[in-house]
Length: 243
Image (cartoon, rainbow, N blue to C red):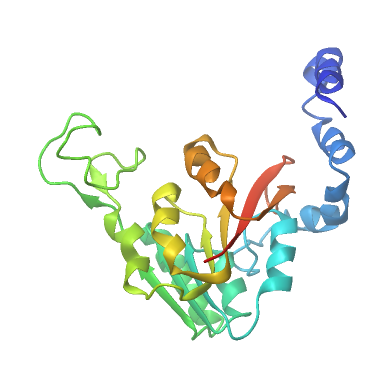
């Protein structure tokens, strides 16, 4: 369905457009039909993606991971969850970084319940920046990695957690947490030649600049429905990192 036709549908349906959006989406995105049963089941009560060890990314991106991951691989991820268990079940080593204390405790509990022993799971909370600053562009603040969601703090430790690893260590780095642009900048040299960088929500405006810079690498874009989320075209991109 082309853009003018889509706008005509919205105009004619008016307030009925939202309830009919799922049908509209699946007509416009035929590839999502194959994941429709999984999408429906993801809303069953009493279940969570963490408990089911499922990554919160488009179904098509998760399918790619299932085919790519091998038992001898090493993976690093920014932002933990069901993906952490999913990855740990498929590769040799997983290094996962989380910024939220409560979520870190919850994921840690599930990792222990699942008997996961090949995952190094670290908590790096936002740290207060000393002094009082009125704006992020203050010269004193500019040297810190700043997140608007946590004013007056820095995520330097969170982002730099990957720096302790030698270059060309990881077969995959999954970026699905805070300050994603900075995470990518630190991660690129840590990915082996032929390995992959995966960025979830890669169509977000806050990562547009780094996504543009990554255009020199071959990539695959996954767009479609995702588990546990209202019908919408979720975007995830994976880049093959060459030397």
